[in-house]
Length: 161
Image (cartoon, rainbow, N blue to C red):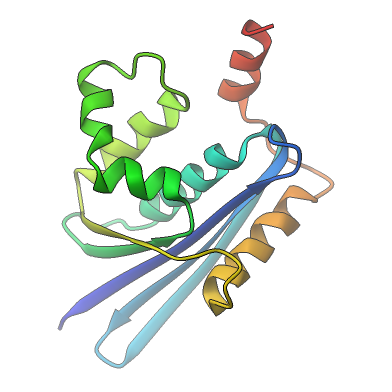
């Protein structure tokens, strides 16, 4: 059977930096069978780009088998350009010198090399039902009473003052 995996992601933060969250919609299609999973999480102090990237990472971490054909739909030009324009390989070669979100990019690369991934950019807030749904998930997650701690970001922020 031909298997398709679609991962829709979005991330947000209020204040940038500030409280943030991500939303993920995973769709696995095998023949006429559909399996869907919805994931979201909020963080007390982070950035929009971190949440966009973390959404992609968490979505990929949910795919247990290696060498799967995956399409990731995101409204993040930050992510799409980094991959499609191959900036990520230059950054990696230079050990991410002067780049932000190094911890997440390294985590992403470990997953990226295990799969066959295509990135598809979606214009945000353009009536794409699933992207709008992921946006709502990310905003709702950022407003939870109990939020996760983005330890790496918070520690880096303290060092930069």
